[in-house]
Image 1 (cartoon, helix red, strand yellow):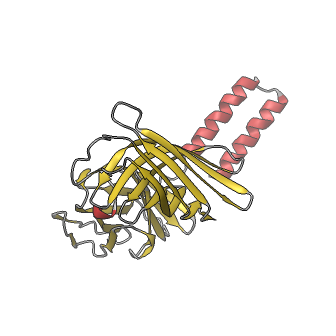
Image 2 (cartoon, one colour):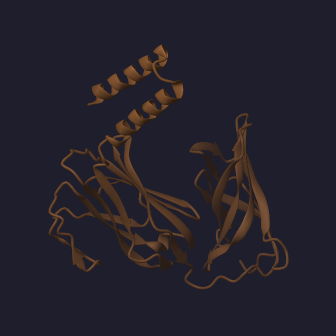
Image 3 (cartoon, one colour):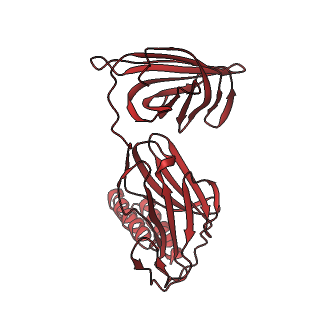
Length: 306
């Protein structure tokens, strides 16, 4: 069939060169043939599903959700791994193989492959009964204690080796704090240094400096920056404070949005959380591309409420 389409395209090109029809008409013929070729491509052999029983949670909740790959034809599809992502105050990646074994990440998650099509799925109240053993069904338990409060976008991707087979966006999850977090009541200035920085998965070591402030309720919520250097290459992350999104007796979690750049490169958008640990006098920055652990606080003023 493909040879036939190639033959038609060659003939169309010949017609154009010989002037048998006007060029505009030949272009129409070409587009028509390409359309047939596109529509003749076999439909995707499977669908990927990501289903959550609840989209609004409270930090500390444990929920079960499911990831499914449902084959729609007799085609053999070599699914090898899956990647589940929760993107919010920080990004959590969960990579696991077709048997449900965790490869990397999966913070606060346990994975169970439902191997028997007639097995009921605990926690859902119904049985699968799909009957096609080429389908994949996973029950994933999520402990939200391991996550900060905020909104999380979700997605799942199925792979064959390094090749993406299909990807699917899921529902947005909202994790509320255990207790309502009060707005900022007074100004607070913090400086920290050292720690261990990873920018875009490159280790920038311990030469890092952080300076930021939180403002009172009648002013902007605050802003700051963190920078560091590895050899002759520097990085810089400038951010604005969004809000305090979670708090307990030891930790205050602050959501920030900003831009970072490495060396003379262009600035890139970055969302992150700043984890202020008053008990240990440390600060962590957790983002998708900017991550700095255990910076030592060397100045704190007006932060008695934190």
